[in-house]
Image (tube, rainbow, N blue to C red):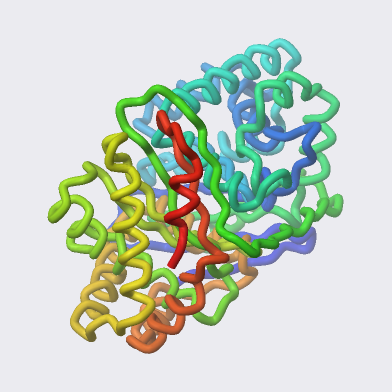
Length: 422
């Protein structure tokens, strides 16, 4: 069971004790990401995430941050999304104080040294180059671009080379002061933390100096689509990589779990419909997967695959056929039970890890301002019926909601536009 503690300054502390664990995770989440940026500072959330590992007053260099955690076999990192940024350290429970000390130190006391900012911009640009050179990754950026266009939700989380180079130290310091404050921060401790009340006291002590300014809000996402949309990036590649899908549901939609189960039926397992048809029966792709993504204000269902250039059209048609099939005929009770059991089984296995537990509880509190326990989630999943799956499929699989992002040596874009129909 978890415990939520809210301090007078607004800082939220989530503790999730796990009996039998030998590890403890300290995760700090802040409610800001690429959706909170302007074009001028696009990529600043991600750049700041990198910079927090570059030195503090207490630990002036990267090595002085990394070595103590490396010396105890710690697993530590950070991540940036559209709505959040996170920093964590997972260690043997004997080193709980060290993990909390380091993570709180980088979060509250980073120096933002000018020389380090200049160097890290180069690192981030190489990261941008790396993902651009990897079509499997870059096509996902094109996917959000075709969905949302020229607004924060449609921009690359890492920004552009130009925007990253244009970000100054004053921009970073101002952004950090605006967003990295008590009311916008959650500290989640999970695993073997010893006495829970003592752990909460330690968090209070380490985060005593956190700022209390009010944080900036994000610009609402604008969605307006009346016809199928397509974006193609022509490249000389051995495979055509594509993302094909539809707009879907946010985290607050009542059919959110039916939406997620629908994506699993289509492409969430090796026995899912698309895997069987596209890979096993037609032999068109090595990888094919479906994913339902839900954020506080947006959602989509996307199918991604890489296929022989000459067979891209055939593969896309086959995926569209599965969209049609599931929106016209009810799934069988047996198939629905299989995905429900898969959903529950995956969650149960993942919760063996303290870092997954921390993310599960912390992200719910941050993004939804509520927390469901695993048991409560399982109950909601159990309530989904075959009629719910059919209703969701009927709602989302409509021609005007179709979107396609594609990378490959395409000669005639019109050919793909023609087949985007249901």
